[in-house]
Image (cartoon, rainbow, N blue to C red; front, side, top):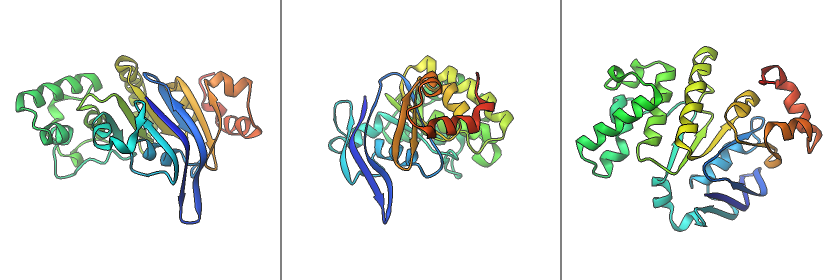
Length: 243
């Protein structure tokens, strides 16, 4: 579904992503992980066309992304770290932003909101609340519902739980994993938390300094580290891992 072919990205003098290639398997959850500034969020923005690569190609469903950008974005849901909800719109209006823009009927919009609220366990009585009236966990659920409103093939999430307190975060993790497994969509999730990577990921891609150091399941990284950095990164968070 998604492929990066020899992509590289520079911001001024900083090389955010060094030339690399990466294939994202269809219908699976791939987690991009690494320390701050390693290039994982830049890779995610390349996949949705918000950060054009300086070199190489981004492929979407077998064709170059830039030749089908509008269509690819309609087939892609995107969630940023703080949710990015519009404060002047209710939860319902945030969710229906794109369906309304595309001319869905009021009935179709209402049906989709009802389906998504049930899927994400969002209280129906809070759908007409303003973002400022919602808890952090509720705002993130609204952001995820908005990303899923058009039933996209791909879901991209940039540290969606990072700003939440640990108790809310753990509960939302459980619900999200159930949602991801039920939808069986192509999902790319960015995190700096190895526990979260192991919890969600069918495949983990560990990055450092704009390069991919190793990719595979958690057992691959634990038992067959490709670089001393892999062991160092895991050891720093090992107490948090479900081992």
